[in-house]
Amino acid sequence: MERREVNACLIRMQKGDHEAFAALYEGCKRGVFAVLYPYYHSYSDTEDAMQSVFLRVKENILKYRPDTDARSWLLTVARNYALNDIKRKKREELTEDSVLERLSVGSPIPEGGAFDALNRALNEEERRVVVLHVFWGYKHRETAKLLSMPLGTVTSKYKTAIAKMRKFLEEVAT
Image 1: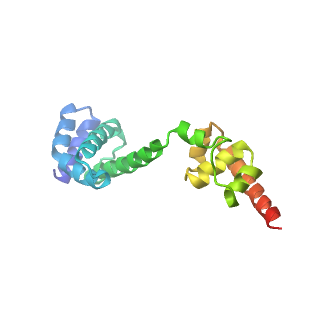
Image 2: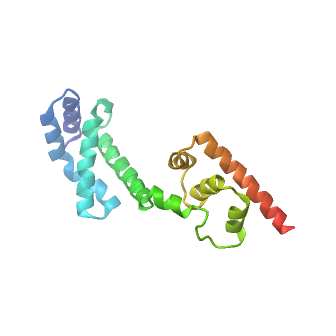
Image 3: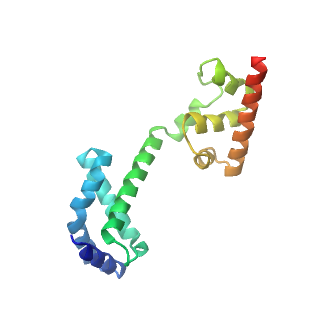
């Protein structure tokens, strides 16, 4: 579908034209599929993502600015959807319960070094914050959400925990 035609369909969609959505889908589905496939490497997963992308386009149609490149906007929506979807799926591999279960006091953690310092120098909350951030790669904002704590508290606990661990390791070394 030509750039002008994509632009026209998006403008018509902004005005509530439902037939424009069908035309956009038919004219752009192959291009969107081609953008998504390298992210999913699976025909069925790519099809599912493509459907979600077009729904997202429909939901966010008022965000489209007619003076921009329509195809670029559509393909950016597709790419962003794929990146966010993959990130979400990776996070879902470890459910909140399983992560928190692994962080419980009795969880098997190897002795010695940083793990030993982690268990002996930190309280349970500090330990959870450090493990989620350092070992699992969660950002402070995500850790705050997961632990139901304010972001400032998580940041403060992390800084305090790192200082405690540093002090503990220095004491053990002397």
